[in-house]
Length: 193
Image (cartoon, rainbow, N blue to C red):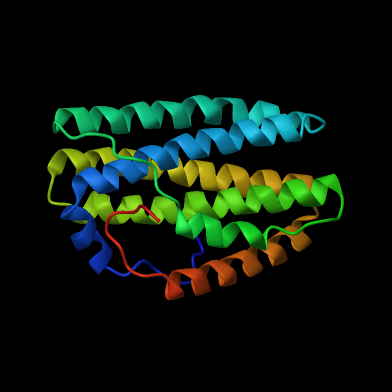
């Protein structure tokens, strides 16, 4: 369903399971960034009414996810650590095409967001199946469903704003680029991506 070209190394879940405070901290900041991305799209593309209508609920939902992650930290008497640079997102971001029409720019940013949601969904699925903490299994199963919905929403929005065939061809380019990034990145269990 997600179309990712390179699955996450299964060892990632074992590493994440050994650093719950780190993975929850990183996850919390990922949710904040997801809410900020939706806000940024609304601010930068007010001439596309679909953006406001579709993404306003996403802002609320992503912030709600941040609060849920914070509750998981508190339940375990763990602390929210400092935010760290997200190498995955930093390496994806330059692939956003510059120039072109506003619609083209918006489409590429939506594909960027869709890809991050797809990888998050895939990682949450792994956690929901493999993490030894039963409460976190359920927590990540529920979030996996939400992330899948966000991925689909962003991809569908891109297809409705741009020419579908062109958008899907660009999506294939994003998927290939992302697979190369995943292949080159160090396997770390303290990061969602």
